[in-house]
Length: 149
Image (tube, rainbow, N blue to C red; front, side, top):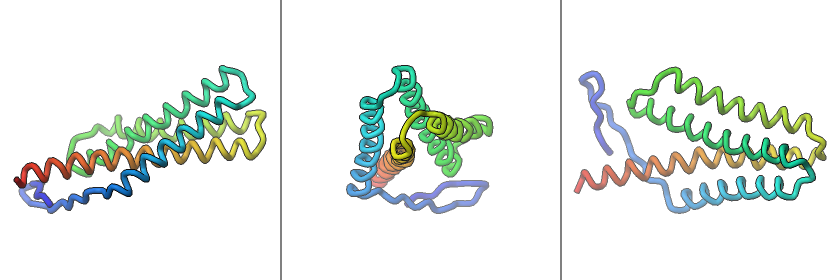
């Protein structure tokens, strides 16, 4: 637990260290989503430029959600984040999802393949957020433990 001064008032922030099981599950989910998506692309019967498009969307989406998580967390902890950066982070996250939807809508794939790519993509995005959250929580928890010693 730590105290943070804000407008001459102290507010208590509770630091919850994530469990090893949650950290492991988050990493497993991230790797499962990313590897499954990439294996699906590798085995797909599509042109190399299409595979590049879908792979780029995955990387774009992962970076975007990590940026959103960091912006939200920074604001929560009182670290300045400009409205422009915060808005761009959300915009790029939504655009990455929209680009995947548009690509899959127009792709000559079976419906089950489209569903597979959509689910693997969303699993990757969600788990990237949890991995980033766990990393940040561990960092703060370790800092708190060192300052209490």
